[in-house]
Amino acid sequence: MERVLVLPGDGIGPEVTQQAVRVLEAAGKRAGIGFECSEALIGGASIDAHGIPLTDDVVEAARTSRAVLLGAVGGPKWDAMPVDTRPEKGLLRIRKELGLYANLRPAAVFPALAQASTLRPEVVDGIDLLVVRELTGGIYFGEPRGRAIVDGRREARNTMVYDEVEIERISRVAFDSARRRRRHVTHVHKANVLDVSQLWIEVVDEVAKGYDDVELQHQLVDSCAMLLLSDPARFDVIVTGNLFGDILSDEAAMLTGSLGMLPSASLGDGGIGLYEPVHGSAPDIAGQDLANPLAAILSVAMLFEHTLDRPDAAAEVRDAVTAVLAAGHRTGDIILEGEKRETIGCVAMGDCVLEKLGA
Image 1 (tube, helix red, strand yellow):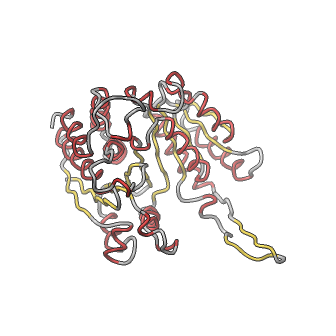
Image 2: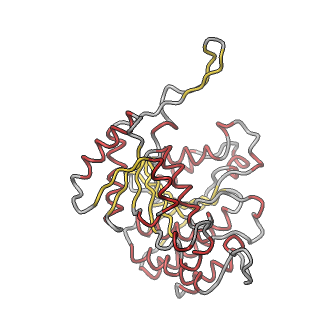
Image 3: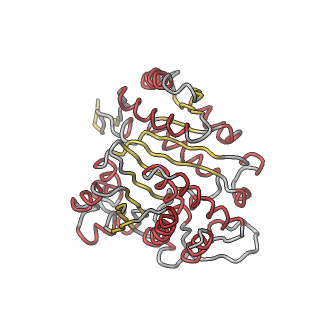
């Protein structure tokens, strides 16, 4: 019996995670895997109940689980709070407490949604890439940082710092991921101006020597940003630091046409993975059965693949989603402009995926 901690969170989080849990249990049953799922609070929901975005009890529950399934956190209700106490701090804390340093964000275009991309269909055809972003280092966490008055002028600084251990471990995640895919890694950097990127190249090259079956390419971040728009199908696995990964993963996400279709995984060395849709809490549609649960459901596929090492079960979930879309089922966010078809709600979309799974 596998223990999964469900953190529905805020906004549409409870709605999409409910459908994701239904799919998790149904796909698990087909694969001979039993799940013990428990719920806890995070983000704004935790602030309302306990005054803080994440309690120690929830952290301990996460540590004793095999995986964590998260909905979304945040919303305008809590935006006026001090930055250090907002809902998002709960997400940052649980990542830190679980040692989750690798963020995996796939971007794939489902054939039925190719027209939804802002790029021409022939450009996005065949997109199936994975951005592996270092999650706990770099300029977001480096010291010194802060603001000061220097010579009578306001000054602010952030420091980009990486050591070889941080680079090596994220590189291994990327190469291991490539071995399960098309065996190509693109390391994105800015080594023409950044000393930090020069170290990245050295360490990535050293790691690559242990993966002679995987092709490695180094790519400047600015040219990578252009190629993602002109020739995105060329990429398999992209590995990079925190800042570049933050930007490029959002760019890659928009190639697919809807944030409502994109899952993610955050992994570390402890064996516990955190799985969540990329989209936000969308409080404007919360509680109205309008949310698209497919990103949360596809996050379940990543849970099967990365935490449970069951690519067969992951493929069944993805195939079910593909079949649902091919059959023409759509939530409002993935209806094309001018397209005349009936939309369905969050629960109905979950029902459709379960039907394709034979549940």
